[in-house]
Length: 425
Image (cartoon, rainbow, N blue to C red):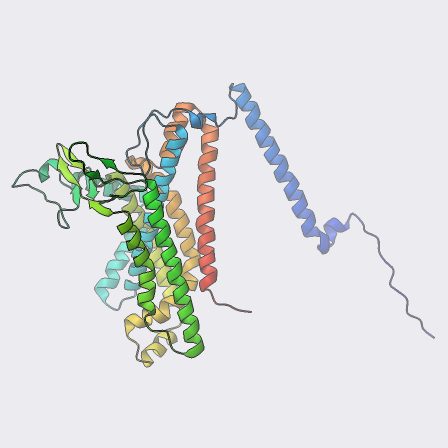
């Protein structure tokens, strides 16, 4: 009679770390981790040794010292008596400003150019082809310099706006002035500012002013409005999927959720517009957008928009032609077919490479130094390092800023990508 016995248990041998596929990958990872750590330790020790040889230490105390230089374009209060840390914040805000403006404009340009390049109109499609090939095959720095030169040499001087027979005039109801020193646009000011208002000593009238708290409050209300609008939209979609009928007035409810709270805040703060006015040798009041900002913004938008156009075109072509034919068979117009059928499906292909373009645009903004725009590369990574001699600390902070910004953009876009992609098992 045969009996069954347990198989003999083999002991663990060191050779299994290399020859056994169950342990080999773990062995390689451990060895790679140890080598990387040893490399970092050697690098840190080398840096410390060289700093000691140069008589330097590793200290961020220079951020509290007086900067001593001016920044022409700024979103927060700053003077040459402010600290290097304050100058770095001004540069960071300037970088974020041009990055946000550039991403928005490049996306709009790219979507339009990508859709129009697929047009059956020969002239329209070829014009879009010239735009795409012209911008993406010429270095971005050249476009920045060209647009800056056009803005500086091709626009009138402020004195040309003076007199009854002025050579130049303001546009949009005498509210916007385009000059060789930049563009002047109306400024939003408040008669009941959260930061308090000054009173004219002679007339006793309240002088409209603006504080960071006013704009932050307005921005928070607008963001909350968009969140509420999204909630209303999702609720309407859920009801439509359940009953087959979309609740009436959803569009106006979503629009009101954004506009009404913002209008209430504006009225409560006594908002009004402060128009630019020619005084002396230049325009005063309003918001001054310098040529350096405009050149960098337009160049980044046009350059990145050309790449986005190709991404959009590829995404649309990835959608089966049968989808278009089915939409036409149901009687849908071409514009509805594109907005409601093609683009929603193409987004799943468009968004992943679009993230890379947003990251490239943000990092390419460091070319601002070519036209004198004071971004974080020019302040923290330029003048501050030159004045303090803290190149290691400055570059570490600069790299950390770009790393965090890139991770935030990537994370936010990945969340959006997960919300629109196909849900599978």
